[in-house]
Length: 263
Length: 255
Ligand SMILES: Nc1ncnc2c1ncn2[C@@H]1O[C@H](COP(=O)(O)OP(=O)(O)OP(=O)(O)O)[C@@H](O)[C@H]1O
Ligand SMILES: [Mg+2]
Image (cartoon, rainbow over all chains, first blue to last red; front, side, top):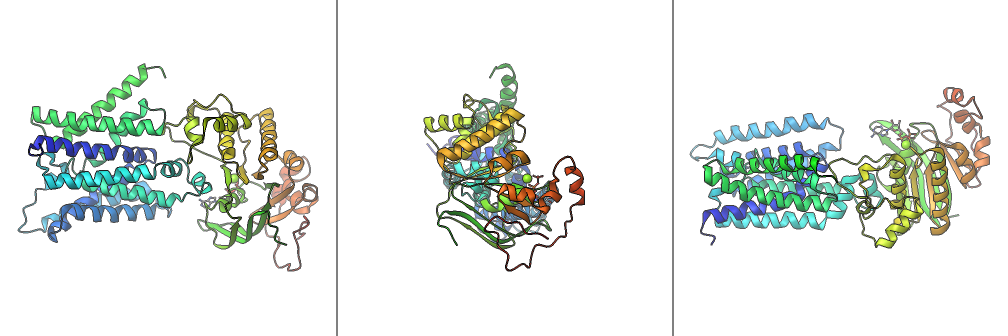
């Protein structure tokens, strides 16, 4: 069954969409979109480094994404103007990544595959990495769900309940880096944040509780992955961007229809 | 001198926030079942004091001690809930720990917020929101209830009712109450002790004693002159270096 590339691709998209959904909700609730961008763009630098050092691309992307995420969350407590700082970090990480790729002589790197993803090229070992990463992130978010939610609501309330919001932030940071590293093959570094945010945003009008929102986001994300993949096959369009387009259409549908459904 | 009922002890606590000394050399304690009120002008470090007690701001120096297993219920001065976060009152009350339905209903009733359980947090009025915050704070039967201006946004009867509710919670649960209030008449009638803060502890003790203290009068005046008195307050007066000085019996230090 896994010999069919379409099935592998579908399973890969499914895995990432489901892991990204609850995490994406936190990204939305905590207004961390730019933070996600910085992490994702840094991953390109990780890809370049791992090719230069001939280590696994996943490990390289994960290491650099994690380093970036940690840097940003450390700086965020120090009174920097965060949106500017994140803008600087996100785009300079991407630029440095692109420049360092050009130094890699002798290695032919398909840069497009890392910027926009190449889900149809997912092989069995990629699939294993993607599913392990996705399962890890999902377990991490489920395990820390309640403290994470309390810390997201208000750090002081968290403290009063004996929860350390810094520690929860770290869990989120780690989860984000893992999702970025596994999703880079699916939608590419430029569109990872879209996969985090759009299903969560599409789920918002459907939900009355955080759990409903996370669950609906997972369903919407998975539907976008499967549907987008089908559409890209039918119309011969790039699959990563098509998945994101499908998710945005779903977002538009829930946003518009929620206006007509009395709640 | 250390009573076994002591819930929180602060010694010589100094807190700096972004280069500004928000609290300097504060000594403070609260015992089981007491109602202690913190008063002081805007920016005098009241919120900072409460946040230091719950561990949300780290002191630069000094010590903070909690009784073993101390349960704290906290009502923050402000709580902004992002509109992207769907949250019913029920779900809010169950953060971070789930509770049985009757427990939730009882807490809401005690806080004067019955009937709101299915509503969205972002759709509550200011007063309803405040009551739900109180309900959440009393849910876990705290040993210490910390309330930062709990009557903000309440009308006069609402505010009086909320104070009655707080008093009832204390009676029923035996919780100590530490609160910040600008409503001086309430403070004076309902508190066991009053702490007057202005970056440092200006004076503290039983309400009658504090009300007569020159430091308190300098901050709040004793009538319509109050507003003027604020301007005349001398921020440089010295309180430190009185080694023989005791705060234990509710006396005020005179500059
Ligand atoms: N994050 C911060 N960074 C820098 N300074 C701060 C910060 N938070 C508070 N401060 C300062 O610390 C001082 C004490 O603030 P605090 O919030 O404790 O005052 P307050 O007594 O609660 O005032 P209010 O009656 O207005 O609630 C103020 O001068 C305030 O400007
Ligand atoms: Mg305050």
